[in-house]
Structure formats: C-alpha cells, structure tokens
Image (cartoon, helix red, strand yellow):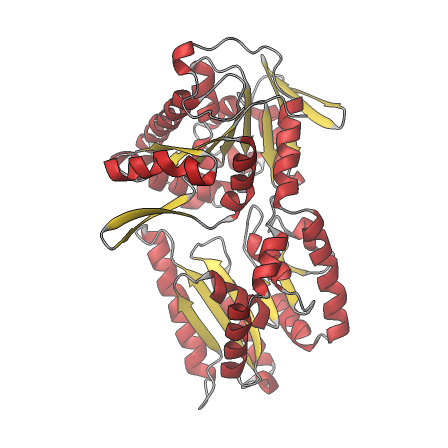
Length: 492
C-alpha cells in the first residue's frame, strides 16, 4: 500500500496545449506517452503537475489552469521561463549538450558555461514551483534530462520526503559521460533522489559505472530484489522500468470506423503496392538518412521490386530553429529527391515524403496499412512508435524492423527483426526479407510482441516505479515549514 498522499509530477512541459477558438482560450490535454502514463495516476490519487507554460504569464491561461482540477481531477502549477532562460536551459544545455552527449555524439556538443548556469537557474525555478504546492506526505516524481538538478534544489529547500526521478533517454557509458564538464555536479544531484529509474539495464549499468568512476567510494547492494546504491551520505534505489503505452486504448482506437476508412483510402491509393513505413520526429538520432540509403540499396539490388513497393516516410517537425535540425531536414529532402529522381516511373514514385504533424486517425491508419514498419534510430531511450505499431495491428499482421540501439529492442526481440542501422547493406537485406515474409510467420511474430506489450503496459510501468519509490523512501522525513504546505490538496 502506498503511504504517500498525493503525487506531484514534474516535467519540462505541462500536459496541455493552449488553443484560441472564437477569440477564447481553451486548455486541452496533450497527447504523448508521459501524459498517457501519468494522468490516470494523478486523477486516481489526486495531485499536481508542475511544468513549463511558455515565456509570458497570461491571466486568462492562469485562470484556466486553476480550473483544470475541477474537470481533470488534478491541478496544474505552471512555470514561466523567460526567452533567455528557455534559450540557455532548453535549447542550450538540454538540447545542445545533454541530448547529443547522452545519445553518444559528444562531437555535436557545445559546452558553454552560460548554458550550464541557465540550466541551473531554470531547475531552481521548477523547484520553487514544487515548493509552492508540496505537502510532506506527497510523492514528487521528476521526469527526464531537462530537470536533473531539481532533486538537489528540493533537498536544499528542506524536502525530506519521497523523491523519484525517471530518465527517459539513454544514459551514456562512462567514457562518453566523462566528457561533460559538470559530470560530478550532475551525479551528486541525481543522488539526491531516492528512486532513480532507467529504460534499460544497459542505461542503469552505465549510470552505476559513472558513479563508481566519478564519485568517491559508492557502494551497491541488492536488498529484497532492489539495487541500493550508497554514495557519501546519500542512498538511492536504482532500477530498470521500461516505459510503455496504453495498449487497450490504442488497440480500440485502431479499430474505430474513421481509422478503418482511412486505412481503406491509403490502400486504394497504394494500388496494391507493399507499404514500408518510417515514422520519426526530425532528429539526427533517428537514423532517417541511413534508412533512406538502405531503401535506395534495396531498389538497386532488386529491380523486380520497382513499381511494387513504396516507402512512406513521415517526419514530424522538431527544433528547426536549431541549425543542425534545419540542415538535417535539407539532407533528408535531398536524399528523397535523389532516390525518386533515379527510380521513379510514370504512375510510381518510390518514396512518399511528408513533413508535418499527423492526427491520431492518420497515425493509426498508417500503422494498420503498412506491411513493414522500419524503426531504426541510431540511439533511443525506448521508442514508443514500435510499441504503437504493434498495438495497432489488431489483424496480427505486419513486420517490425527495429534498431538494436532502441530501448524497445530488449523487449520486442521476441518478434521484431533486429538490425544495426549503421549497416546499410544489411538493413537493405532485412527489408527484402521482410517484404517476402509469409502471413503465418508475420502472425507468429506479431502475437508475441502484442502479448508482451499488453502485459507490460504504461500502467504497469507507473505502478512498478511508484511501488519501488514508496519502499525506498528515506526514513528521515522532517517537518516542513507550514507556509510551504500544499495549495492543491482537495482529496485525501
């Protein structure tokens, strides 16, 4: 049984979008794995979500946020960052240092001290927002690499209660991590949490190796199937908790009439072509260019496939104000043009390229219509596209080609075709193998993956982390200043 009263979730962004309709502002729930995972838990337990809501305070938006709990069952506590803070904390430290470094690409990092200082100040702002709403019996759950210093900032403010952190992206091996000039400060800050979760056992091992290399004398011990780590006067449970999806909700929506109609339209336009699907956010870690080159190799080797197969590549816009992302977009578009220019014939283009966001109906329809989904990031914490594809395949058909460097590969190797995305020639061969796979083998593989995802869904993930977080709480919980008591607790 949980001994905490309410849950405080802390993430870079709040789980909402602000829309203007007929000159009126509205708050609507956002999509995404984190929202799907944690919103039901917050509604059940009562609590608050702390996150950023843009650069400028808006009285109308604040009022809407205050009223959120009346129809969602939990409160919102916005954090407002100035454009300068957003630039140094998010664009700078988070996305130009931590993101490339933790994905194994230190040469892309821009180690600027102003980014580090901005990151620290922003984390302090998030901690102040938490302090406005905390109660000493709450469970505070901080999410992802944007907020690694929040634990230390909360301890400095007197928090002695339950404090968890989940790391959604990969954690690099120690020879990569040591490139970070502020490596010791980050490790000390992470050890302020009493539960630290990672996507895979590899990430957890890398974190433990970094502790042993950069902090004096850390100790590890297994207690009741939990791995406990001591570093100085700090103790933490360090675990592996692979994040997942709401399997039942997604599978049910995949069978909705509007999705079925969209599937029929896609297949009619394809005119009998086998569809290969790539679905990625614009990012240099997703392996989009390598995938395009593998598809080009496939067409070069197998002339009989020309006019019989098409690659639908969807790229979701992201961070294009950062030069590396805009340059990547141009490189992708150049490759698409080159391949289409070389192999197209009247009535057939090998690649259909889309650079835009998709509705849920469009996304599910593409999952259902595809013969092969190619999920081949060069490095990824989990990659939920692979799990969504499987959940949407209620027909138990379709082939998943999955990078061995995606966290999901550890779970879905039971049915996926696992590849090294850097090996272009091998990826082309696996694509050919997938296109020839019979339905009996497809069904056998897909049923194994769907069964695993059904059992290990997003609710299992959150329950597992919160249960371990409750067990590993520090015994010393001091009385907090009454002025910091929660403003949002309306349920017990």
